[in-house]
Length: 119
Length: 113
Picture 1: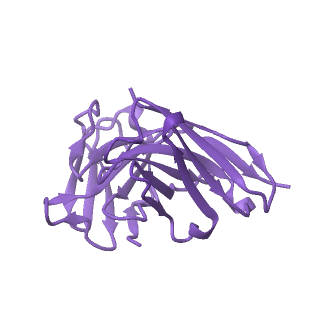
Picture 2: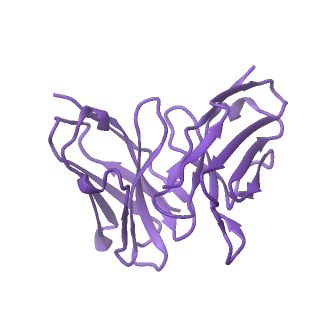
């Protein structure tokens, strides 16, 4: 059974760096073809894909946010970490992590974590 | 980037009636080597994460009721709920997984008339 859970701060100040952790079970990020992605959703708005990391450490980023994002994995801990620098109130959103096999959609999602950016 | 455009933004359908949602991609998401369309549909209910309904444009995820069906190819796709149930009230998103950046449509809110 695949599960994912996001954790991190619920409130960050403008200009600060956000660090979110996705802790998962039921699969290994050392298995060929497996990836974990991050997606966010501002309140009442649509989904926005942010980043992906694969078993071979290949990484993809949203072009519009690439300069602010870093995604890493710790295979031994079954964790994926996303950092986003220079946070702004427009970054207020629910942040989700999700499982993906290469070429497939995002098939398992965490429950999400709401991050508010405010001074 | 591949832009995904959904229509309508919202629709209200009577219980037991058909609901149809459209999704158009700015370029083809058909992978010629395997003839698969890399298009997925998700359902999102309030306060919940998205749930994968359909992938490869027309393949239902395990456990998804057969009243949900997907069709289309290339750049034009449709999600159909053949007989709307109360539990189908949600926002539905299409997404292309043909290439990164992965992109989503703007969502279609389905309500009961």
